[in-house]
Image (cartoon, rainbow, N blue to C red; front, side, top):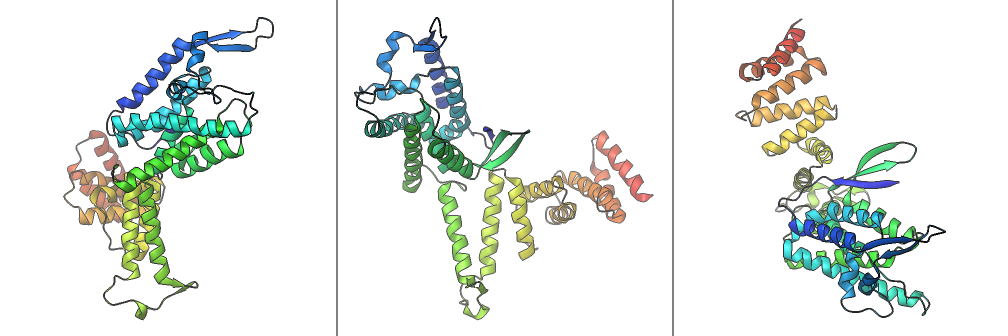
Length: 391
């Protein structure tokens, strides 16, 4: 079993529209839910108060208002909790990106279109005398999740898994949503009764299509890491590979037009763009790997101050101490007046002393750090490490 528990991005503004939808769903659930059990079998025979039935959506003879009202009805605690959790998980960032009015319009359109998809398939595949009602916000939430896939495909989703043991891992949103939530949960694993799989698929289709159109038409501003940017990045990779390789062999240099940028320049530009995108997403591990590729091509490349420091810290956290030391050294060389440069010297001194066993380099940087450090604990740590390096 696997369950997404968080994403690695947060909305820039408070997503009031999404919070309002969650609150309204919960309030309506509390008002309408009235479980009644059979006195002998203890099976659930009714979920809602009798007056609620008119607001459910019946595929054979739907009323116009039911295309909205059904999305605020839920058939139990697990139903409402699951739906609201996923709405919170993916809806906050989509609401922030689209804005309050557009998000609400998008959400209600998702409810309507997912219901239409459900009705179309239901009427084709079920006997004429069957008319099971549709309830729940999952179709609208599928549309929101599809929008998240388009707007934030490269962000990381932290997933809790439990099989023989329990743990967490991070999966890019494009893979988790596309393969786990859409294909596996709604195409392959269609065994749970009373689940409107077709409403989910219609919601995903609407969410992905509508959001892509919003990006293409410019109604929603493109960012550096939405699906359109991924496509552009893929196209740039393709254009880089095509001129450089033919049948697996590198094209000779004389085939490049003098006025054009060299393939190496294109590769450098591409890597810098990808590094910037990963750092924006806070996927620092991927950014660090791309940076090491950049270093092998041209070790004179210098990233912006914050990006370079993030990558140096990430390399250190991954125990790649040689690469981390080189990156810290580059940072000090190019940004010597950084306001917290003593922290960089301290980190570099510790790496040289504890991990790389280079006492002379350690003493040099620890002494530089000691001159500017103000925190008593850091000064003591610096002095202790200096004493070890000098002995």
